Length: 165
Image (cartoon, rainbow, N blue to C red; front, side, top):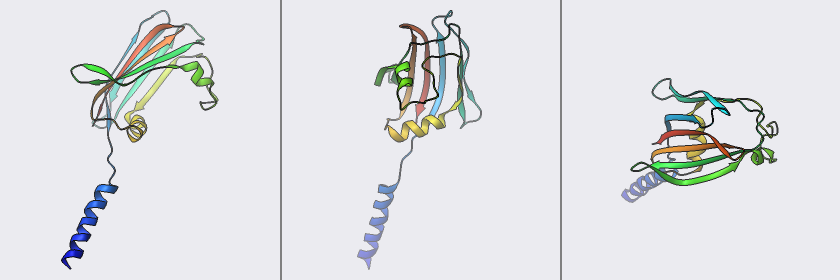
């Protein structure tokens, strides 16, 4: 009888450890936007709003002054804070026009930008569901730095600071 009880308890402990999923939580800490060419783009607003302790969202609106834009690249890098923010894992450049032309992207999207750019109330839930379930990241403080390049000239920089717990 004691052996059956020990086997049953061992099975429960093993199955609990094996089948339990661990989730990470992304929490936004800060957002910074800087327009490097004021004749090309003006940042109307760029802020992180904290509604309560558990709900924060990012809103950004950029007024583009020279439209349409037909040649855009996005250079992004992921940084982790050690003794300052150091490059971590990703540093890539994406040709936005080529990305939008691909058949797997949104067919409604145009090949050039003809209006202002608005990111309205992006909560951490959208990032949390996509990022932490696909890519295993160690806990810590991170920064995503995005350089917006139009016609081979760096036009703006966006920095999004976040914490993974």
